[in-house]
Length: 401
Image 1 (cartoon, rainbow, N blue to C red):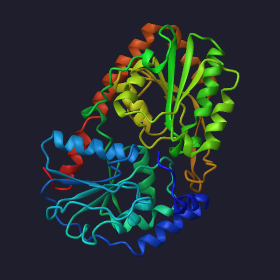
Image 2 (image 1 turned 90 degrees about the horizontal axis):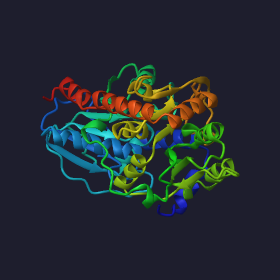
Image 3 (image 1 turned 90 degrees about the vertical axis):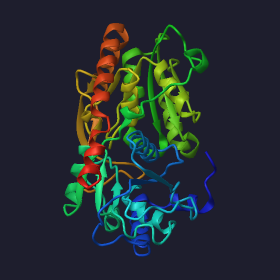
Image 4 (image 1 turned 135 degrees about the vertical axis):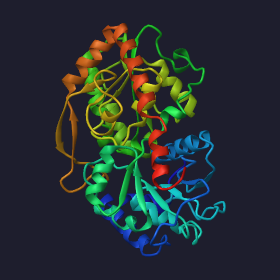
């Protein structure tokens, strides 16, 4: 990962809440706006977002492009990169009236538009494809509402939060069409990753850029310890992206694993196919998240036929149930994020029960047949629920056949 610039480091040093509100308000006063009334769309679909970045939003934009192209729909791709770190970018000219779907969340959308041609939004429908991970939306999202005609979102969970926040906007649930472009692992094996052949291996995979408090890997480590103590035939792999950018969080993870020899960390930023290979090499994928707006890692694991143990709350519960995954019991608590990013007045999230997670891990580890049955059922359910049907329904609803 490239070193952060001085302005970016100074920006990140400010409190997250005031920082986001100030960014949203100031840039919204300067950015170009779309037409008041959305023109009738035609000519295919343009997709904009973090297309060149290994982020959740970037993955979502790439998945939408792949699904559109697979259906024979004309597309245009606009790579905004990271709006906070990138200067003005070159964009291809778009055909008249081609609708634009922007996979850029509301608080930074005006900033991104400041780096685009001033006439980019003119004469076309603009759709914000937004993901949020709490049942309430913070005020920093409000200025961005003026830059989109309607909102698409990857889950009912996020849609419900946005409907309460923006009741005047049309909001459509369009899950990421992960099953249309399913994960394809490289040829790497357990030996290539230095993993034992005869152990049951559980994988926890997340990015520290997505908030350690929300992803909750400390609970995953605690559940593994409770289930298996130090058994060498029960291994936990904690795959951490962007560890170098959040050294204090990564140190907390290492501290939680002290004295447990069957936990190892993987901090390399692997090529996507190699990352899928690591998932496929493991026996269980564990996600004790406090909240998800979608949940790409569990979805990809299910499509690979790997059984998933996940908190039974928020968006992941929309594409898995107790027949196709192991749903961990939880208690709802007030959402508190030390970074101040995932907070909103009155918002709650789930605190996964360690005993419930440990029980699921133990059952799966001790029963290869159960792992196979859950993995196969999960794969079938993910294929059924994460196709492109919702995307085509949304396109038809705005007038594109």
